[in-house]
Length: 93
Image (cartoon, rainbow, N blue to C red; front, side):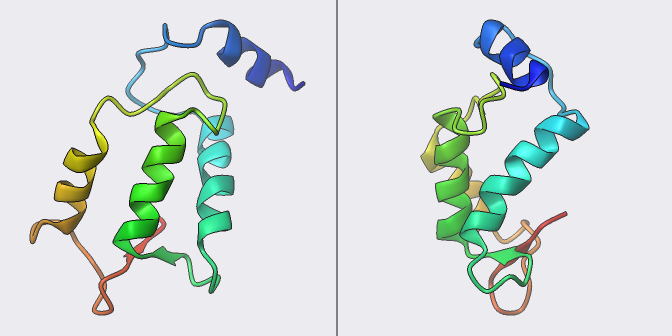
């Protein structure tokens, strides 16, 4: 097991940082890419909700999980203020 992954598992639930380091971003990106079926670096809102569900279940093994519940996340993604493409999808930043 990579050292960073082992460190994050050891401090699971204790890590309250509000940003991700490069290793952690790559962990999230891996989940994102599995959901990006057409490989256009965009996801539909339902796919983003699935991504956040995976993060809440710590499938990225980072020890950092979103504090918001899934319904809150869906409301933010569906809000008019959230920037979406013309096709309603949201791109990888």
